[in-house]
Amino acid sequence: MRFLKSQYVSKYSPNDNTVRVNSYGRGVMDFNGAVMIPKGTTAQRPQLTGVRHPIDGNGYIRYNIDNDAVTGQPIGIEAYVGGAWQVVRGPAVGAVSIETLGPGDATETVFGPLSKVPASANNIIVLVENVMQIPTTNFTLEQSAGGSLAGPGSPYADGWYLKFTSPVPLAKNVTVFFGFAN
Image (cartoon, rainbow, N blue to C red):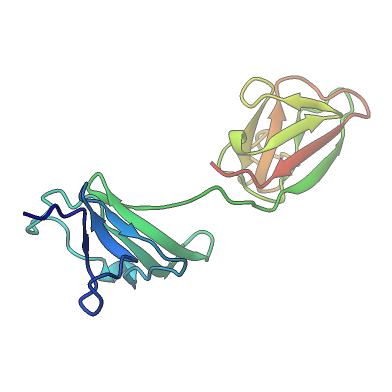
């Protein structure tokens, strides 16, 4: 009886071990090229519920060629996890942009409108002069629609503003850093 250490999957070369299943049942790809995974649109995703094996469908991966509705960029690699398709994202370097909203006058608490709309106050860094401000403790993000930020007749145009809990000191600039993901 011969002990089988690994099973080679090449039908043309029985000793080709670039793609094989080892004795632990794990697939091994020992090459320096690339693997092409299935690709298609969101509508072309495979039906994974009620299918033979595996029962829950977890563990499938594919490349989605559709564009993200928010960013306009391709969705990219997605995996079926916990009964739903999830986008697989790695850490990426994003562009950080800076906006100076002007100096304080020791009475004003509202600054803006912001040139970009962050997902939340936790996705921006706000400095007054060189002091970092803490979201919801030192400032909040507020939207003005039809001058609603300060009531009827408000001088604030439609858009998103920073509203500080206390007036910004005289001649201290408010600076906002954008580009931080969730």
